[in-house]
Image 1 (cartoon, chains in turn purple, green):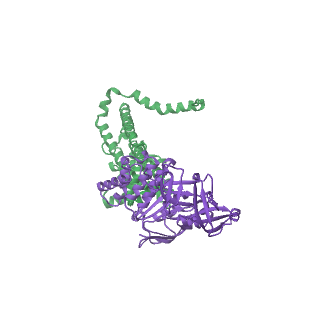
Image 2 (cartoon, chains in turn purple, blue):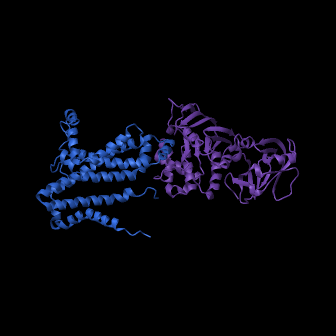
Image 3 (cartoon, rainbow over the protein chains, first blue to last red):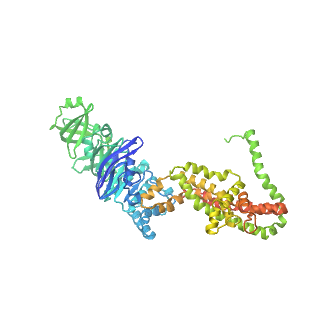
Amino acid sequence: MTITAQFTLERGAFALDVDLTLRDGEVTAVVGPNGAGKTTLLRALAGLERVTSGGIRMGELLVDDGSGVFVSPQRRSCGYVFQDYVLFPHLSVLENVAFGPRSRGMPRRQARAEAGRLLLQLGISGLASRKPAALSGGQAQRVALARALASAPSLLLLDEPLSAADIATKRELRAGLVERLRDFKGCCVVVTHDPIDALLFAERVIVLEDGKVVQDDSPAGLAAHPRTGYVAALLSLNLIRGVAAAGVLTADGGLEVQIADQSLAGPAAAVVRPESISVHPQSPHGSARNVWSGVVSLIQPWEDQVRVHVDAQPPMIATITAQAQAQLALEPGSRVWLSAKAVDIRAYALGPEHG
Amino acid sequence: MRPRAPWFLAVPGAIALLLLVAPLIALVLRAPWGSMLDIISSPIAVDALRLSMLTATLATVLATLLGVPLAWLIARSGLPGTGIARSLVLVPLLIPPVVSGVALLNAFGRRGTLGQFLYDHFGVQLPFTTAGVVLAEAFVAMPFLVIAVEGGFRSLNTQYEEAAATLGASSWTTFRRVTLPLIAPALGAGMVLCWARALGEFGATITFAGNFPGVTQTMPLAVYQALESDPSVAIALSLLLIAICVAVLIALRGRFIRPLAAP
């Protein structure tokens, strides 16, 4: 199902103004500063807020046009994972997950069996009889995801899915969520204030600032062409996806990255800030353990700095000062060596760790 | 460290407690313990007790069926006039019960504004009937329920209902399976208060429904009548009424006031 959302939603002085198309099997992350309208966008898609003008179309069906047409939330096929999960406190985990199927007309026994299967599949069947108050933040997040998935929605909406988890469980939850979202067949929108999460979760990132979409791009596109200061400062990062083993992440393009975390194994991604990368005219000798070679493809002045795009596997971006650029006599076509210290490289698991 | 109670709080506080407890102690001291069983099992007492329990329970059921929707309208609907409605709900709490009785007579009496219509079209007559007792008790006691339940609706996070809606639940399913269970503590407290107030109702009942043994004579009315003929019977019935209230409150307390979050 393709979802088109082209609308304006006004609430007092605030106006959210979007024009988006969401496609099946595509995970879209929505990032932006607080108050940018991220949650409002999700609520409008779910039918919890009405648009002021324009419209939302799910497949062929117009669900909201700001005036006569409005399909209520219960008749939209939307799974919604709320920011603080909002599990029903009086129902067990199993009953919480069975709530959706039962509400959509499945007999009680069958709904419970269905919920049990889903819990088993998500590896949390041990929690079935617990009440939400007896769950940790991480467990509650998984239950909330299970509840949203139980009625097989064609649109999955997640609002800050990692915000209520503590730091210790965040890493594991993030890896699990990346895997779940990748397996999800419908449209999926994840709201997050954490740029790294946005880059890890999604093939497509929508940046909202003050109710407007300022950029709608792939992580690589955000890195290559940041449109605003917010994007440049927080989202314009080198993201290297690959497989980790024994402290080395091998990128899909073949490039090898030394990472500090020796225990990381399996699908993973490394994130390096452009300003953490040094550019050298010859192969450097020093403490940096990561050295990659490539050809400069583009030199892009950015405020008082210069962003150097280098064709490596995958392409990388380094930020250097204008003086350094002059000294190095860099121009498109120059062969350069890039280096980064292992401590400047953050690595994240992107799936079940096996090792 | 716990603060020492200063005299200007300790003395009036102790007097207040004495004021509340002394009449009850006096009742216990003056009770005709020897003939207690005989008085309690007398036909007048049994009839009054049966009628009180029946009417207070029916009044609570009526107040719940009508008061919960009213509380929802006031707390949630956002309709114009809900502020005025909330103030109107408080009126029966503030006016003297006997005035409530006079008002009910004028509304539901045979010549009353609504009563005449009911009598002419349906042959229904409320004053001086058991149904009239239930109506008078519901009139006086429903505000307790409405206020408690409205507070419950108001403090309930609306996200629970939104979550239910996104999961495909109709508004009725959401109300039945999410909203009601989550306001159960407030509803329970409201029902207990309502029932206790209905059980003790005197002024509106005697004015609107009269004082006929077996039909409209509830316990408080029986106590009042006994006081004129045999004070020791009045004392015995009063103690019985107190005992019932205390027993019911203790029995229901654990059930309703237990925090929901406990696993």
